[in-house]
Amino acid sequence: MTRRQQAAGTPGGRGLSRPGHTTVLQRRADGGEVRRTVLASGLRVITDEIPGVCSAAVGMWVGVGSRDERPPVAGAAHYLEHLLFKGTARRSAAQIAEEIDTVGGELNAFTAKDHTCYYAHVLDGDLDLGVDLVCDVLADARLHPADVDLERGVLLEEIAIRDDDPEDLLHDEFAAALLGSHPLGRPVLGTESSVAGMGRDALHRFYRRRYTPERMVLATAGNVAHGDVLRAVERSFGHRLHRAGQPVTSRRGRARPTGTHRLVLRTDDSEQAHLMLGVRGLDRHDERRYALGVLDAALGGGMSSRLFQQVREQRGLAYSVYSATAGYADAGMLSVYAGCGPERLGQVVAVVSSVLADMAAGGLTDAELARGKGQLRGALVLGAEDTGSRMMRLGASELHHAEHRTVEQVLERIDAVTGEQVAALARQLLRRRLTAAVVGPYPHADDLPAELRELIA
Image 1 (cartoon, rainbow, N blue to C red):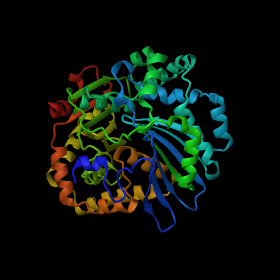
Image 2 (cartoon, rainbow, N blue to C red):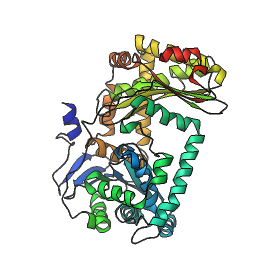
Image 3 (cartoon, rainbow, N blue to C red):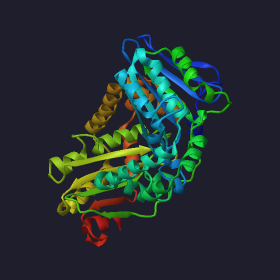
Image 4 (cartoon, rainbow, N blue to C red):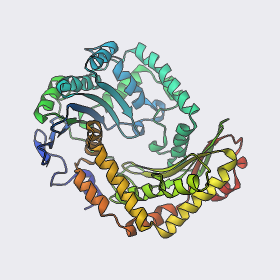
């Protein structure tokens, strides 16, 4: 199977149905089902019926994030995430808050680089309200000029908070260094200048142009019936469903990242030095992502990982040290973070680089391979017991892959990962030239430890 076929979907429970048709993607022994309906507008409605629970999680996933913004409107997707809750044609901001509080539910949203999700978590008997609130803020937000001006101050405060949090700032600096001018290298929050200069007209154009049904997935998990969800969507979102559209499922073919900086320093009068080292990784369509998950777990995913043992347990050089991965349609990242006293940064760099070199040369031990798989299995299965986590997994998979893989199918792929596959991936990724970002009390790059300057040279 080619990656293009993986992105487009294939028969056998994956891929998109014709508009108006409902497909059963999974039937379980407990009586639950996963169903998908593609509406004529291109909106996809996918439900995970879970008998025996008392809640329902509803999420509208929009395939729009910070990567879709031009520089003058950097931060627009996140700006909208705030503004859509400020009032609609039917509800004021206070009414939105009062209605969700009255039923003891949760209504919130988050913005990422390649999507935004607006979600509600309610009792199963309040499903209609959860769907209606999510659809209402997505479809009929007022974007009143006074609200735009009011929320601008809140967003500028959020950027200031990010700048005051060295670890958060470090993540944005590292992405910019590794991915360069690519849209994925820009921060989700935008910049002070872009947020300060963004007016209501620019935000409204972005909203109406991007927030269209073919870019959306309505995912629901819990004690729900697919037909009930469809009827609730029609009642709440029907006026947006009249025009025809084709679902947007992928962003293949965009330009690859071209990072230009291998070392970025942000001087900060902090008590700690914050370091991030990493390389470009795998995109989210790469089937080797399961091997990458095992590699990441063994490298820095828990207390038994090499980084935790070598940096913290055996040497006491840092309190926090971990590795992480991120995968997008056309790029990926593998990174290592450590926070330590400035006088220890050189030692930390030496230990981390040694761990990376050893893993690139020798792969994992059998015990590390087993523990890495165990971490992935445990996280997956434990998450499947929560309706909110089920909705998140369902919506993200549908939006980005146009497919549904059962927990059992994913477990099979994790179990199938071999030591040879992980070793080959470690050789490929961990021998790449490293990019580094540092936030800490260093006036100039020349003041950084020699171990780091030599590693990046």
